[in-house]
Amino acid sequence: RAAALAPRIGRLLRQGRGVLVLAPDAATLRRTWEHLSGLARTCGTHAAQISGQLGEAQREHSWQLVRSGHARLVIGSGHALTAPLHDPALIVVLEEASDAHKLLSGSRAFLPDVAARLATAHDAALALVGAAPAAESVPHPGAVLPPPRARVHVVDYAHPPEQAQIGPLSGAHLAPADMGYPISHDLARVLRQVQERGRQAALLAPRRGYSALLRCPTCEHTPQCRHCDVPLRFHQDTRQLTCHQCGYHQPVPDRCDECGDRMWKARGPGTEWITQEVRKLLPGFPVYRLDRDHQDDLSPLMRGESGVIVGTQLLLSHEAPPDLALIGVTLADTWLNVSDFRASERYHRLLRQLAEWHPTRAPMTVVQTFQADHPALKVMVEGRDTLAYPAAEERARAALNYPPHARLAQIEISARDQHKAQAAAQDLADALHGAGATTHEVLGPAPSPVARLRGVYPYHLFLRARNDARLGELLRVLDTRTWKARVRVDVNPRGGL
Image 1 (cartoon, rainbow, N blue to C red):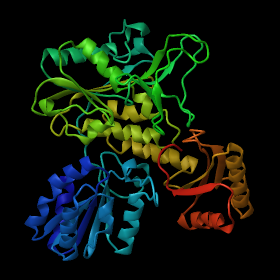
Image 2: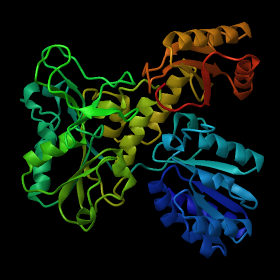
Image 3: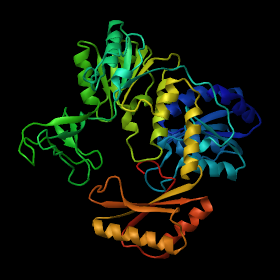
Image 4: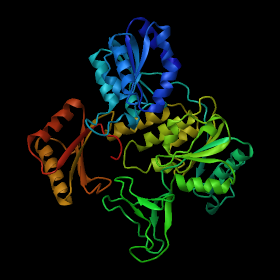
């Protein structure tokens, strides 16, 4: 992708024009800087990096380079959108569908939207570039590059006897009990080969901690957070139950609060559990863990020594180990079982990013799932091009009148009293309908997927408008009165819908 962009960027820089490249995260920014910053020198200018990771002196130096016109190529995070770039002719947004582009506080802006407005204001071209295009990008003209070679093997937990044989994997004689969980029979066999041959493997876990919850095997009671309506996550290394929403934690109870049973059963494996299973499977083999709670030193792996790394999506913020032979997605359904119409798109993009994680080779990717026939996975197995799934998703969105065929805004109405929040949400819905909004434009109100969060009860309304002008008309209703609860607006919301 960098090679495809380079000629156009170079041509504009030689003409004395400015180019802005926007990356969603530190890993993408680092790789982009390595691939594109050298263009500036060959075109008689400088490249400047602008991001929140820079120190104060570095930011000041980059800012002055841009302001003075000495740097006409700016590569950065969302901070770079405010850079005083002279005569911008091209704005490049990398991985335009990434949730990392969403500001989670303050304006809650989605940075690709801001970039599009900036491009319009300067009469500059806008390029959206990524491992897989967003459904919103499909209607725009563009180039589809050949996808990287991918070797994908699917472990179908739902229909084990029907699995196709791939080499030594997935014999049809296997019964469901023989599949293995959270490390399947197939994945275990390939991991043993990694150990025997002194290679490297990476296993993607669905969550940090030991398990998603603990459950009493007698009465099925699950310890819950005191402040949120979510089960507490179990962390074995600290013997704590922790809420990943608000941070509340407590020791593991000796007995069940409901029936008094002393036993607990873990459900939903996390990085700790999977790491433990790999160490049992491969005794004496180096196993590393990488998540927000625990980050092992990966320098032996990066030097080419053999081993297995178990981590969350934080793995993709690091370079791939040089001798990587295997990538395992231990439970792919986690990315699908989310109340968000973009969940399958996000899942497909993750698979594409894993396929190109290693810059020069195609490690075998083993995907463990209960939804082996999901289209987002099937296009990978079949080796179809990167537009195949996003184009199908765009057609489905057209039938449902979702973006890019409509503009969305989420209105969150919250209060510490549930009835007060519910009543305020209904009052707001009534006000919108009273101002002329149709039932197709106002969805809800409904409780949030997490009904109580940090002691507050959030209710959601969704506005679905044909364009920005109509969305603005609907949002102006919010300014017509004082509401009896906290009201927060998020245009183009991402996640948890």
